[in-house]
Amino acid sequence: MSKTFFLRIIYRNAANLHKITSSVESVKGAKIKHLNFISKGKSFVGVIAFEASQLIDFEKIMTLIRRNRDISEVERIMDGSLCC
Image (cartoon, rainbow, N blue to C red):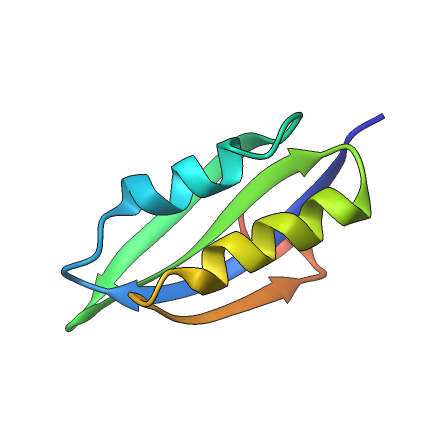
C-alpha cells in the first residue's frame, strides 16, 4: 500500500524542474501525484506530492533532492491541505 508524502521545495529560477521530478521517479515505486510551483522573484516555491510504498523510499527521495545544489530548501509537510 502506498502512502502520499508532501514536500515544500524552494529552488532557484535557473534550476530545471525536470531534475526534481526525475529524482522522485528514479526511486522504484515512487509516483508523482501533484505539482504546484509558482515564481516568487528569483525563486520558485511550491509543493510536490508523491506516492511511495515505504518511509525508507521517502528518505531516499529527500536525499536525492537535497543533493541538487539548486535547491535552497526542502521540508516535509504533514498536512496535505496546503497542496491541493
